[in-house]
Length: 364
Image (cartoon, rainbow, N blue to C red; front, side):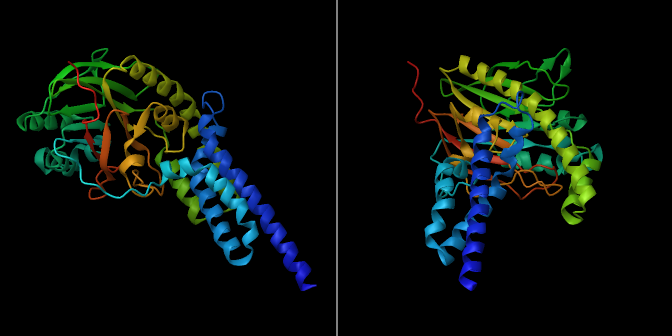
């Protein structure tokens, strides 16, 4: 009798593992769904880490209790191994070669949220950016009078400070360079407050295209985020149903808007194929998403290439996600990519990498 019960339990667990394996596969392969066509299904990539942990636990369980069943999680884990690496790379830190470019991307959230967050050199984000000594600095949500003050500080520090106007209005995406800027233009797409700017800069006789993105935001209000936390700490049925419905609706709407933006930016980059390319910013999408998969077809994720761990770049409201990214063309190489958790003034952490251009073919 006990053997029958044990066999039944193992079969039920095996069935549950098959279900979790299919979940993992669909979460990974959802990156191939265009959110404009399948807005809700495309969000399945956000569940990838949950499905991954469940299958790893099943693998451990089967190793201990029934080795033959290890094939169930092993097959799915092997099939999605490239996605696991994108989500949680385990690279050994290698010091960047000399003459590597230090690149910083940072959503500064209006330099701390209010003008009272600090002025001039007293502002924590100001001090961080100036102390970073990065060669290329791409900012998002760089709004307010504080930005003008930072512009002056950066000019004094020897940076080039290009300005971009869109219908007479300066955009919230901003950048600073230690090398001359040859041209600047906005990449046009539909959005109320997000945007993308392309810079061509001159570095040691070569042209480098730098694309600074702040792709469509999910527009979650403080009330939405509070409801999300209530779902975690007080998971009542009604709270869960209403909260999940609202979050899925808002994120699906944003994802459907974001995917055409990604396609437009990619088309722009492809027209610049002869140059080296850096694409960075706040993508508002995780590594397992249409956005990152689309950029990753022709470019290399700096974090996947030289980062370590899942690397959560958003630091508020229990949203454990990496939505800030740096991609580069295949003729470049990244080193020591990291998310810097030393500053928490913004709701994002800065993302830093070192780019070496030795692989790039030199122009005659």
